[in-house]
Image 1 (cartoon, one colour):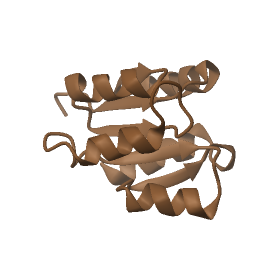
Image 2: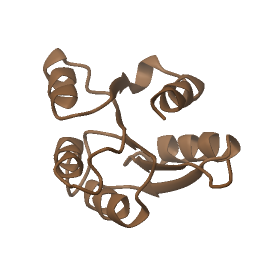
Image 3: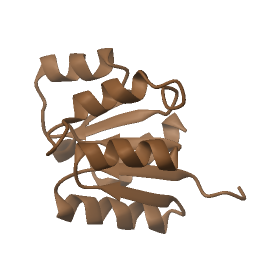
Length: 123
C-alpha cells in the first residue's frame, strides 16, 4: 500500500477525537480531523477521504446533515461513512442508515480497536 488510507474523523469531543486520531495514526492511516460539521463537510470535499467517522451531535452542522450532503455529492457519495455517536435511539439508527451510513456505532459500546476493525471492514 503506497498511499496511506485517509480517514476523516468529525467529532466535537476533543478527548474522543484525540483518542481516535492517535489510534488510527498508529495503524498507519492518514488522519484528518474536524471539530464541527461544517469543517468536516469542507474537509471531506478537499481531502476526499477513504472513510469518514461521523458524530451526529455537532456544532454548526449536525451529522445527519453532513451525511445527507455527502451522499448528495457526486464526488463524495461512495465514501463509506460510519456514524459514531451516543445517540442510540432506534429512530436515529434507522435515520442514519436510511441516509446512507455504512454502519452505526454507539460510542459507549465500542473500544477504539473495535471501531478500527469496523473501519477496516468497510474499506
